[in-house]
Image (cartoon, rainbow, N blue to C red; front, side):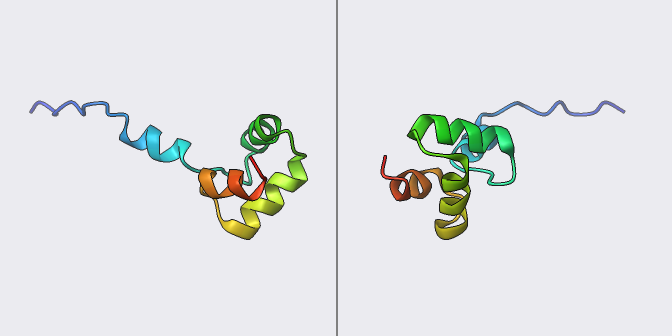
Length: 62
């Protein structure tokens, strides 16, 4: 029996990029470099406003 091949979509990737994973050091470093803030400041912002990239950047003043 043949298995249907899953089509690759960008939907999951787009949703993932809209979030900042506060527990992932590489994401925290990326956001810190992008906003010119410290990594602890990024983690604090994620904790305060949630993991939405838009809200985190707004909180950090970018």
